Length: 152
Image (cartoon, rainbow, N blue to C red; front, side, top):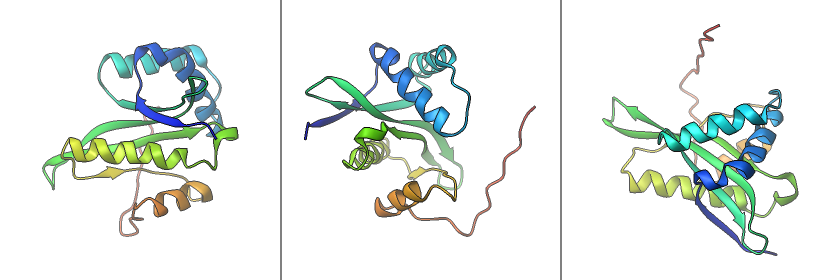
């Protein structure tokens, strides 16, 4: 099994990262749009609006997964809070603990920035994801409701 390295993405990764990001969006029933995905990712990195960690298979220098985090703030705790918004591993690389390595990188940045924690959302039907998050120390917030207002 080839070794996997986790590192922060740079603008040099945009081309390959775009393909992974597009696969992630298609998984969530969004229409494929690699041109817009490249612009979106480049803006996030150039404007320091997110932190993206990539999983790289060292032997092939191939990006096989990523997670994207957005900084938020908790008024009640008066601290930074990170939103783990995206997590994706190419299907043929799943089952190799890569998702857990990406989550550990997210936990590390949370600690390094003295944030109060990480939050995320996933579909109730995402059995694999829901199990993954519980096994990596996330707690299901059953006492809160999540609401969304679509600005259309």
